[in-house]
Image (cartoon, rainbow, N blue to C red; front, side):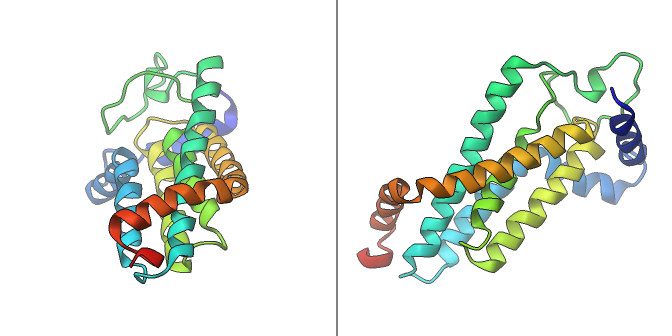
Length: 192
C-alpha cells in the first residue's frame, strides 16, 4: 500500500456507513454498475430516432470498447494479484457491499464504464456520452467509498477503459455486421 492509496482511500471510505443517503446511492452505483450500463444501452438503442443507424453503430462500438477493457483487465488480474482494501489484515476498511476477495487491480467496473464512455466521445449522441461518462465517474468514486478498491485500482481502470474505448473505434467497420443484425432484428435504420 502506498501513501497515495491509503490517504485517498481513508478520505473517502471513512464516511462509509455514517451517511445513510450517500451510502445507499454509492452502494447502488458500486454494486449495480454493469446493470446501469446495460439499461443505458437499451434505453439509448430504443430512444434514438428509428432510422438513425450511425448513432446505434456508435453504441455497438462503445460496447466493444467496454468488453475490450474487461478482457485487458482479465489478463492484468491474472498476472498480478493485489488484495482488496477489506482483505488486508488489520487495515480496517469499511466494506458496504458483498464482494469476493479476488484481485483488486484494476477495477473492472471502472474500465468497462470508461471503455464505453470514451468510445462514445465525439461519435455518439452528446447526451448519451455525457450520461455514460458521469455514471462511470460516480462508479469510480463509489468503488473506493464502499471499500472494495484502492484509488489506483479505479484510476488504472479509467486509463485502461479510455484507451480500449478509443482502440475499439479502429474496429468500427467490422463491427458494422453486429449493428446490422440489431437493426434487422428491431426493424430500424434501412430495415425500418
